[in-house]
Image 1 (cartoon, rainbow, N blue to C red):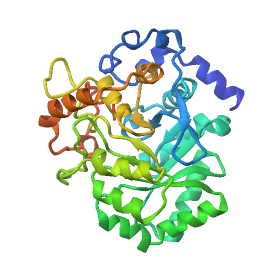
Image 2 (image 1 turned 120 degrees about the vertical axis):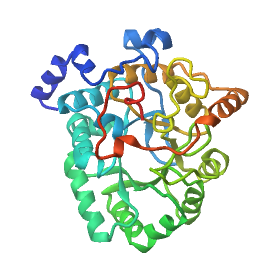
Image 3 (image 1 turned 90 degrees about the vertical axis):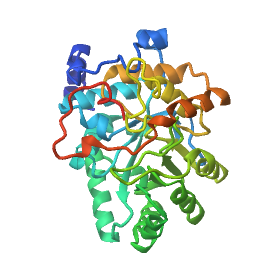
Length: 348
């Protein structure tokens, strides 16, 4: 990182961060309510070996999708990413299409000076033709300011047909070749809505990592108007991944913000409890969308002083959140969407 970039980060104050949105820390709870370590700047996210890979990855990964995209100023986004790194986050997950490439660019600007200390994960479509995928990987490398990608994912397996598509399109063959060349270190996949597709993918190929949309309602949250899956990632897909030595991440752990409680909503839960539930699953950790330093602080404090839920606590949350496990409408994807800074606007 250049002296100019370092000086810019030093100039960014906590007040500057507040410009990111009106939601603030209220939803996670104040940092002091979670752990005094957060106020002292001592809460460092733990790291452990990710599946059978050689990555010692933080149990909290930073997502580069919708939450980060709500930070409109690039300087603030870059500073927030660096803040997460300083709190111990070393796994950063994004997608080649997120923000038209801006997400990868922001990670590259914030993290290129610390390349040996961090891991970069990004995503590509299952139907990408070989030449198209290679070009997109090259673009990702340029945006990240690096010569290798730690994890390249086949993104968004919505059904078993997508598993077949990633093989028939040549996308998987291309990733394997890129891995052999060293351009890609590991290969993963993501699934928002289909435990069955995840199981089929795990049977068809020795993936290194995967992201599964597991949350405390036990209902996978899906794309707009796609309906609800009839199974849970917890019951079969996650156990199979672990059996095969795959590094399993939970993501979409708040049901795309739909499960987060405001005040006393009986069928929803505090954000920190949703994170705690996900961390209590037999997964490596969680990928979390964060767009304010308070989100990073409180999540880091939780992981630094973590107490797993009991099976009974988890069951109670499953039952309590069941009424909220209905079809998700991803309003922020609509062409006319305007972020109003509301209480669910800041957490993915």
